[in-house]
Image (cartoon, rainbow, N blue to C red; front, top):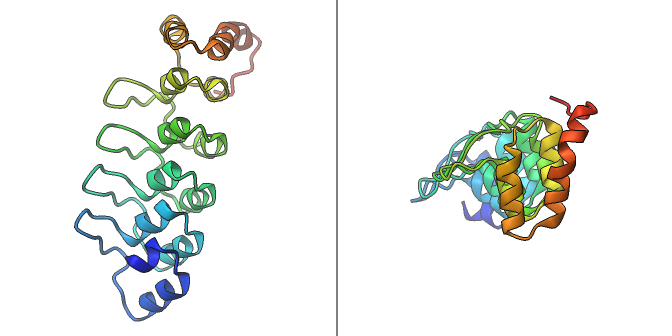
Length: 189
């Protein structure tokens, strides 16, 4: 675990070669893969996946997966490796946060664009918010635009009220222009 957490790819490879249990978690069920993703240690992530690490295990504390940890840490390359390895993009934490929501929360548009093709765009968290509404609440106008263009559903009046309540004028502008854009056929879904 410590080798993965600290990005020691050579040590990870050696331990795996000696028969280390690739999926053995700590007391919180943090596996070496989750630890490597949290730290953004791409070489370790690749080595662990090559050794057969289960990609969709989650921590007992908050149900974070390797992808959610990579996304929260803004580690695009680690997230890309996981997506390419077939990770469940729609897995969620105890409070319903998906990797897409975590990417929106972080304001990291490269991650948002990476996750959109496989993500359930209209999935709700435990508070009833979608990734789009989280983007609205955080003032992420680019996130709002990207999600709308990808086909996310929106209650325009509710979203507009939330944007204005928080003083997010740029988001309100995106939302106000959306009916015209949608009529022009710019939505991909």
